Image 1 (cartoon, rainbow, N blue to C red):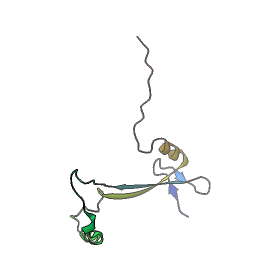
Image 2: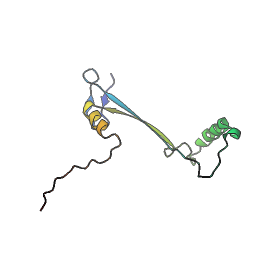
Image 3: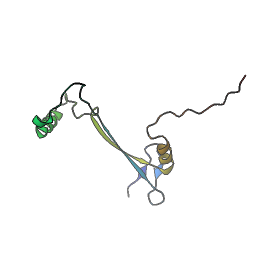
Length: 103
């Protein structure tokens, strides 16, 4: 039997008794052309570029396909952490509004 736990709070998740939520996160670096730069894709050999990147990826020196360029993560959440995640998916700090008296 597979045992699941919430990746946010660490609580065990029992799939036979409760819903388990899976959050898939995909991060990729996107570079836009410099303004004024003309990009001509007609002459590019995309397959050769991919081949070169994969070949260099075997070198420990190359970071073309490293964590700074592309990452894929997967997280299991319990129902309570799922609710919290949906309220604030990118983790921005929520500031509470304080009512000050007019002195």
